[in-house]
Length: 111
Length: 114
Image (cartoon, rainbow over all chains, first blue to last red; front, side, top):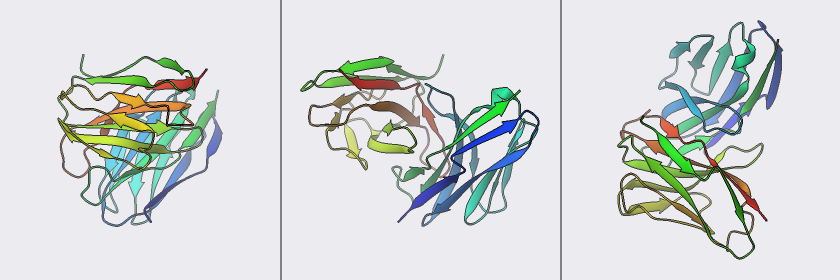
């Protein structure tokens, strides 16, 4: 069964304290892995797409990496405005409906 | 401004009542989706549509119905058959059919039971 698991469920960091969020997946025929940021009461905002193992993408303090079994979202020197829920999703196979979401990591950055 | 508009932001449903959530987009995207989000859970797919006048059930379609009469609009009706409708509902669009085209989301409708 196709599955996406994110860990940890919640993470509290001090401002400037770097860390990583994990997204592990079990799918057949990975077509793309997506990272989104979601603020409370809002819809998810697209961050990155990764296509193949070894690929990396960066945006400001965020860097996403991909292996054959998992993806990491590295947050370097985070600021309080980085506080949000980060969602990972995977597109499997060729069907437009096969986009499977993880349950997210709630990230809180203390000033 | 290009985007996805969901309305209303908050909605209350009485027992036995059907309610309709609106989703309008001006991104000219072919594919549109409805998801349900419950606390501590990932997004679960209710219905999706890849083209006007065509739509498919997702993983949790029971108690819901949709229509796609126009490219810009994909309304979701929560029927009285949906016994646990309290949730945050998200509409999304997707441009392009290739691998890796991301979804774009509206800001959601929060539905509660009166």
